[in-house]
Length: 141
Image: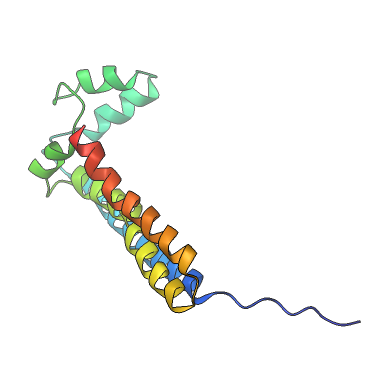
């Protein structure tokens, strides 16, 4: 009985996986730090206890933000104004984790190109461009 050999893992997949893995780990630590800071802050712009109570009461998103200190849903500029708060650090950690897919795709595409997988490298570049451009388009809307 012969054992089947496993196919080798493409280096582009390893590169992509490593970048996503480490960025996710760093992102999780930033989110954890921001969450802990949110609960320990005395003077909060966005009170965490109110948000948690409103969510557990089953209020809609619009009702939660309408009853908060901000009076409306926060946007990116809101978090930039309170950048040193725990809530903004948490949001920045989440954004870093989500947006880390862009560099991972680009580095993976470079290794695909070196492996003579030009079609997949070009499609990776196109999808990476979408991943980088999409947040800016969303921000402008």
